[in-house]
Amino acid sequence: MASVEECRAALVKLVAQFDEIDAEDRARHVVERSVSCRVSDLGVTFYGRLHHDGLDPFVEEPPADGRTDVRLTIGSDDLVALVEGELDLARALLGGRVKIDASFGDLLRLRRLL
Image (cartoon, rainbow, N blue to C red):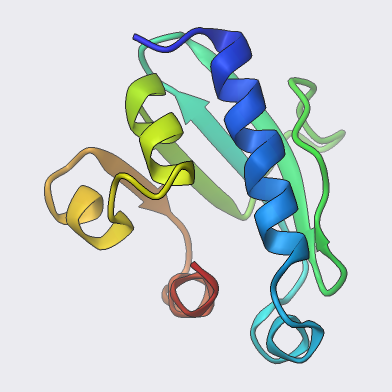
């Protein structure tokens, strides 16, 4: 099991990876959304915000209204493997290792970016 610090580091890397996405692609596929990432085996949830300029750093403080548009649930080892490119998101979803709760439109947009 990965630690909370390893998960934080993976999310920092994910933010950096989003910064590398072409600005035109982000403009085409990204709409502003609040995001939560619940690491199920550690009992911790990280919160961030996706927008045209990228992905804000994740924090452990929920948004003021307590709601998020896109909710991911994943195990700590799977989070680290996903960000490192060792786990395919589609296979993880089909295998039940990752759960994403979002609108169908948001899922399609995210798929194009990941």
